[in-house]
Length: 556
Image 1 (cartoon, rainbow, N blue to C red):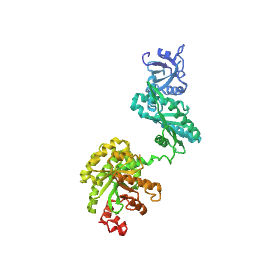
Image 2 (image 1 turned 135 degrees about the vertical axis):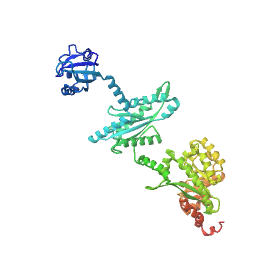
Image 3 (image 1 turned 30 degrees about the horizontal axis):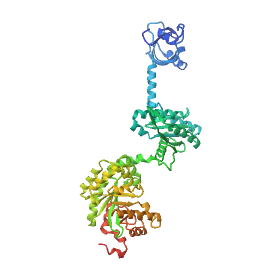
Image 4 (image 1 turned 180 degrees about the vertical axis):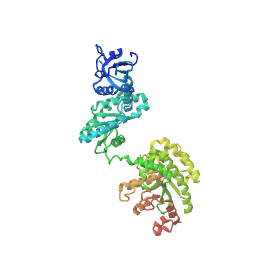
């Protein structure tokens, strides 16, 4: 019996101790003999009823029973797994109880539970436990009628720490930041790390502007002090976004998403500050995921199509070329505006596939346009920032020219100012190689980006496209007129072509023509149209018909 288990007891039919092993006596720590005491009296009060019931239910010929209980010891309660069975070699109705110490197993289980619900680096709750805590606070808020807030915080400039000093230093910064942030909050608040350099605070009862400003101010202020780590003095700040229950959302996932959206806006518009979520300022991304999935389906189903907007000679009004514009004809949504799907395609990389297809299809289409028009034309294709930075872009360009048999001089590639200025050195290299293929480069939306004139000298630019923002108020706006005149004069001296976008009235066209603008594009001379409509316009020379009669006779 002494060797049978960690503790061994022999009980009478009533559950009193007839025998206790030496290890059991030592564990319980009583100075007198345990004989005659009920076994249940040695266990924690909460476990006594279950033990008595198990002993009472144990029949003489029954199978052994197992039960977990806690024995009271001088230092702490200790969990044991007890095995109860009738003792065949003893007196009438005696019961043998053999116990196994579960301390290590319970500690291991507790450690595993902690690891599953806490961040290993900072020991803060992780996303799993955070979600559970938010649900609890929501339930309390519904009962009490009192709102609360969720605050998402991201460290500013943390990437430079990892890149410059290594991840070990970065981890130390995160641990120190977590400790500082925790000290600024109440015991009733929850601070969690949800990944990378991002933290989330759940603030029960904090729902007025004054309360929120006080808490977020403390949190941001504690991050302003330098972090002294291994001889390095490191400065990182923080940006925060706040969402309110129930004003902004009533479920935990939505609250987290909106707080994160507000934090992203805070980072994008200045950093080191806290912003309250606003439906007007933050466009909720609820449709983006489904729209993104539909985009991949659209590629497989061939739902993307190209439209073509005429680019017309300002004097003769004869079509000289077309700008290629991508459209998405969704079976349920109809024509999806490019402003909705292009940013998503730019983010997920789908723009590379769509852009390559558009470039090849546009080059092939130009061959058909020229066959109908019986004269040379050109095609203009927009190149997105991600396409331009892709290391396979020149291969895509070569494939399009080779597949279509088109001379590069018939192709104009439109690139925005911002795209060029992301990495001017890379832009100079790529533009030079594009020029080697005789492709012409157009600066799209000229004057609305970085407005740096240095690249007009540095880069092989051929065309400036004046943004519609400078055209729409002509000729009444003196400021727009001055800007257009300056661009036209600049282009003239640099031997660049100019295309004015967004021309919608005869007055605008006349003004631009009088000041030497070569080409115009807009609803006056043609909206974006499918390829078959564009070919009909070329065949019938429709846009020449827009000219006054006395000038039409001079066209050959």
